[in-house]
Image 1 (cartoon, rainbow, N blue to C red):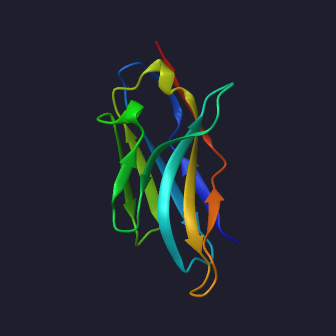
Image 2 (image 1 turned 45 degrees about the horizontal axis):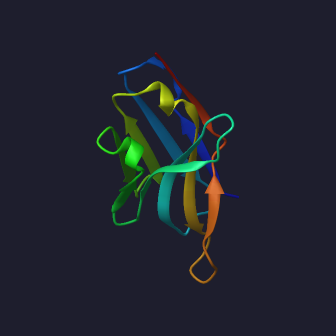
Length: 121
């Protein structure tokens, strides 16, 4: 069984910074893309940032220049450095990983439990 465990959420004032981390554990053959999504109250879950196994990155327009995603393939971890936070960044942030359990089966998505990020004005 594969699990993603997130950490690093919290309350911060506008303009501040937070760093989210996510660690994958279990019987993992390989991990393709990893990413961070967020869901604000009353809104749909949206992609914040994603990173491939070769470290190509993709960001939502709303966070470009403020957030940085990174990963450590040896440790199966992904992090999100969030700077210049705005009240509109307030949401539950979810870690996602596209994982293979073996070399012949299809990959599938695993989600973390979510961590709350609250930015006060």
